[in-house]
Image (cartoon, rainbow over all chains, first blue to last red; front, top):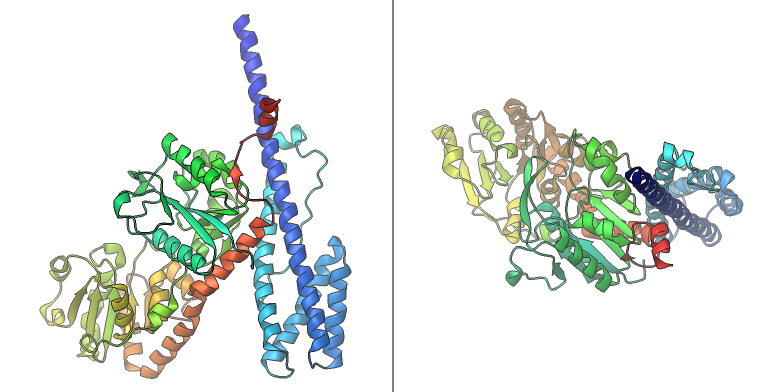
Length: 168
Length: 390
């Protein structure tokens, strides 16, 4: 009798420990999704700001200027759902700008081009890491223990940001 | 990144045994220090007396253990664990950079012991093992703590994906391109139609025999062909099956210093890498390209990935001496084609320079650091800790 009670108590304790351990794991992953998104967001904002600066300071034709300015404003204003479209169109405009600059059709200061290239590298890395964090959360939350004991609490299902792996 | 960082690196293998991971870490740490960051590197050290770098913290003597089909000199256990914990507490790091944490090693211990920004680099590539079903559940919650994962090649990334279902950013291994650009042609070594091979040549996976078997056919069209073999190994063993007429065309240079290596690449027309297996990156090809050699390599996956499927170096059918002879003859006879290949490779080798590689690694650090305030000792279970503290 005593040993049965002891076993049950032990089982309950280890279950409690395991649940707490799992919740910690999930919490850490959620945290990572948030921080990696914040970082990515900041980089994207910087890119939009850079695009505006290029549009304003460079000697480029009004049409390119318009495309650049409007897509930069769009990506600054967009909420996370529309963000993807806005950023893709900004990427496209910047790619176009970069190509024109390379073929000397328009002249942009070299420092702008360098800054843009460095920023694009950073963004590419940040996207990869963010997507990885999201898939880690999804993997965990799909597991039985996590669903059964509702370990995610009220945390939102992470929104996946589809951003093409673009080359600049 | 403008802020100067305090970086803690953990090396899984014995620091004083030669190896690719150790060289990579040493050069990376030195590069970061030259940029003004602070690096402390924790590693197993066999002989603490002769340790040269004052930024390396010895964690104890490594033990030799068979792991994954090779003998690894690694370190773990309770004493190592407490060394790791001390090092983390004393270091007050902004970030930990662990190398190869998926093997039983100091890196794994550090990953368990620490909380905060952590990045890991995965070097190895291996086919899926059966044991992974047993190891996976143990490692998964540990590796999950990493803020970001770096794989040194597509193959390493693939390995990580298959084993742990997790993604990684691919950042190649680095080299000091300036060191190789400074090589001078050694006229004692060079004459027209010289081929070069570098490496521990009596190891069968380095594939020297494939090259030796190709020599007779090459010598028929190009009688004055010369083969320079650099690196340690048993010459008699290698030469015993080689025809006497070919033997006169082979010269052994022995082990080269780093400066001699740069000269070596300048003193050959073609660098040949006939490795048959067992490469996960192929840093030697990057060095050869940076040193100004045109490269011909076997089409094993690591080489094919590194040379972008033949764009920056010619590929031949792995283990096929006749295909190798054919490719070598094409490039020996057509000096313009060779020159083009060399120049493409030289330009491309810049992506392996530490300047570019370390910048990419810093980008990853930046993402990792965004999530925390420095590295602290972990308590595995927050709920538990709260209970205990009450």
